[in-house]
Length: 420
Image (cartoon, rainbow, N blue to C red; front, side, top):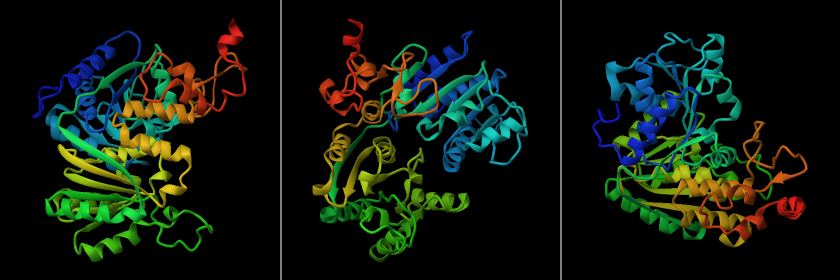
């Protein structure tokens, strides 16, 4: 299935697909994590074993966090495998027509599946970091094989993947050669971004400007809020339309699915090469030839979000520029500045996820919290990031830095002292 595709799979894609297929043949159900950086071809790697399982009679379901991504996955399946597969894109509130089809949907699929008493043999949660734990668990039976897919796993999944019980399939090779440069700037340097956008459009490329909010009316904003909170997709689009008439598209969550499809098609075709978007662009949307990205108010986003958005750059290869723009670099807290500067140095999503684990905590291993304080079976002995990461993953942050960020470190004795 993998080698039937027009592109040549990388060695990592072949190994990941073979590993997933082997895990599906085990007598115990798979609890797997497919971790590959943005653009490494994770979708191709998991679709091949999913189609193979489907052909052998398994019930296969794929969850995605947004309608846009679910549509893209369904189109990928049909476009790549044609009459080899039966695919149903299940809308929220719809019905399952054929339980043996590969079902593709958003979180609404879980409700549809519950009403139909449908349980998959193989459940894939794409962009897992955007789906809450309960969404996935509602479709899992004791016999269900589960595969989480993410470039930046949530802290809880990241922590669990460091220990036996979770099978980790990694993809490091990029199928195309690309170089992404990330810069941290403030609004005083906005001319640099304008020049980069102009150069990209002149070269026939695309540009994306991402904003944290959509609303056009900032009259209700609290006094003293950052300018980031007053930004809006529509307001920015008006400004860019003056500079680039007829070349600007908008994309945000409140648009209908059809409006989103039209906007994405316009950007992909080059009719409107500049897109002003909210974070709806974050989750796996594939637009070729985006050469410049400006993320406004970058300090309002987490590392995973920033990395996912940056991953829309240079999907077909080549060079890309990502500008992390804040209101004023001088007013950033030390923690925020360190986080954003880490983004300029680190390009690997798995390593960024480890940093996220350090910053936010691993969450509950037996509960549903995906970040925050972690406890062991001994309730009075909380688990620190150091306990999870030391000697298990190579981080650019030192163990001392981990300890400094650990909220619990100064409140209890170390485990060494407790047990010695």
